[in-house]
Length: 74
Image (cartoon, rainbow, N blue to C red; front, side):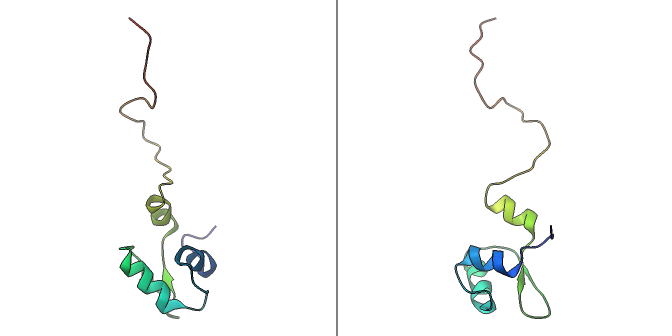
């Protein structure tokens, strides 16, 4: 798997065709996404950044609090 979204994935995110690079960049700017532009003009979005923005985290650190309440009495 690549470290960046491919053109097809990026077009799917933005809702445009794969060859509409300026439209991709305009959508990313409008929605405050960070990206870099490669030599062909294609915006490059890091897969890890995409996952964070979409709410998919792979955080390995333990949570400070449990996800569910503890109803056991001491």
